[in-house]
Length: 147
Image (cartoon, rainbow, N blue to C red; front, side, top):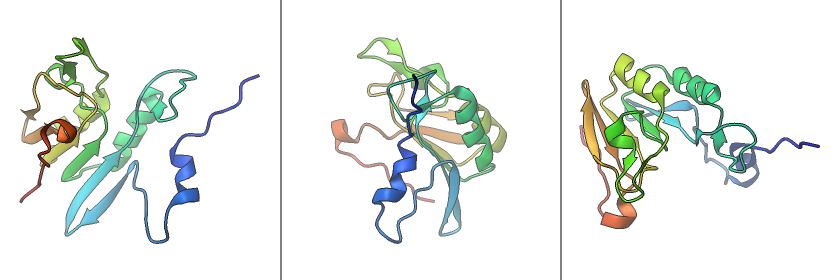
């Protein structure tokens, strides 16, 4: 018998302090800047990782955002330079939906992590600066957005 595993997001409401809101698959406006958030990653079937979802579900979350100024995700857009891990010597899963959203809407910046030692930490796709900000533990240098 298969018991449906609850996604991690379904548990958040049980533990969030009052006044804290999780924005996953949604947009928050901060000082007039639209910031879109897409949590989780892409995986198939009955994964033992509750934050992985089928690609169609992930794509729907990305498409629901629409145009944003800042696009935040865990996994990178599906650009080989951003998905290749030089230490593990393999490609990590990137998102075609994120790449399409970047090409269509041209946010100012796309921020992500997941790939620990990327071939390129940052690159431009059109007008969008794509930055792997997941190096903080290694570099101890935070990434600051300035307009």
